Length: 245
Image 1: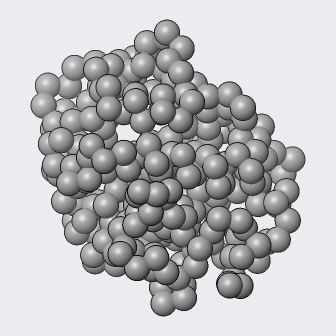
Image 2: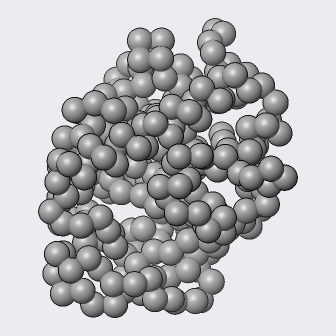
């Protein structure tokens, strides 16, 4: 059935929320990846997840406790960014033009029993961005497009993610990475090089990417110090993972 995003293979559309979304592969086909929503439900969900020790201890930031003010500011900026990207995707038919965006509009993990729905509350986030562009996140959100002459395939990209502990151990994050690569970053964005880190000892995070073809380079690097409010701010190290196409 035709919809405003039917020119992009694999993208579904929820007319009730006016959102495009990606559906995970079976047996996790009730999970979706959608744009951000600037609403109270997502603010409260985001706060709940990022104040859970099982999540925040595997992140360098944001600060703990994660306040409602922080959540509202973060979601407002992300919503403004992905709204621009969604509008651009709807209006742009040429894939070479789509490759000019420097962020992904499908970042929020949701769940729905209805195959035609973009889903309910926020369950997590998977953020893909061009690390080698060396642009501060706040600046990237304001203008989520590459400079003239640059495009996605020329850049080194990375993933960052978190998921509600209620959905850990089900393969959800591995499936999210898989669908983003298969439906968006490989065929449309033509991204050739991924390089990212997983905290040393965080085998669950490492396996998420190994299941999707990433390999451990053998390199371990310092990734800074954990926010002091999360405990002793010891220096943290991460395994370096790579994927080349």
